[in-house]
Image 1 (cartoon, rainbow, N blue to C red):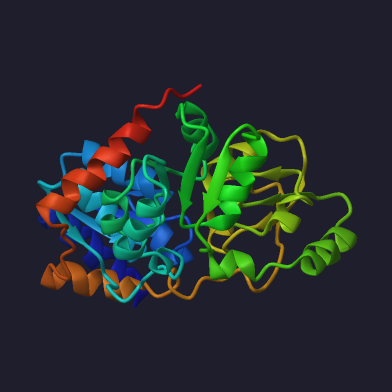
Image 2 (cartoon, one colour):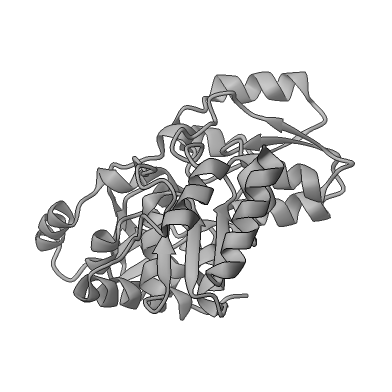
Length: 304
């Protein structure tokens, strides 16, 4: 049955001139059939470069919004519109505006794991990969960091000359990983390196050989001479790590590292979305333009 579904999906993608994107945390079978896999913003940027008329985004709601922001001329489909992000929902534009009023002139740095409305209220966006560079690029000595307190604290450790006002948001999945769980895995696998995402709590990242974005994890594990890694981020990343490094061993740091929202999308959902060309995700023009400005400022920050 799954082979039949895969063929139907590929046929419909071709018929609709559509590109299928899958986030690194999606189910294995969804990543396997995708045209492009990656982190949320990288996917949206790559999709904008394609000649596709339709973007089918296998991810969560804010990711599809980002695609709609960067590709207003394309139709963006989100197979599971109920796939949300608890961290993104921890901040609203209305409450962020209230906070900004208390700190006039202080810039807002917003993690891309946020809604379009929140991005529209922000001065600049960042990803987990470029957050340190984004913050260093600002001339201001104080900033508001939204919505992930853990990523904010991770960045602050690298930029000690700036004062951070943290939003009290967090990723429930990464927050569930405990120091005790990591220490158990390190004891079981003393020859393994521990790599985690900066969305983890500071006491967890302190144990890591490397704290980095998912894209950096792929690069690091591929080029490292180490043969065994304890992985501290959502379980979906194991699919590509194992595909890219068949001779290396990857151990999930905790069984709690499964995001229920990331696991909602199935091949059946993708097929139904392509059959009905729904649900369509769009962003009102006034919000889209302001949100895009925050993303464009981020993209203008020089890379290495």
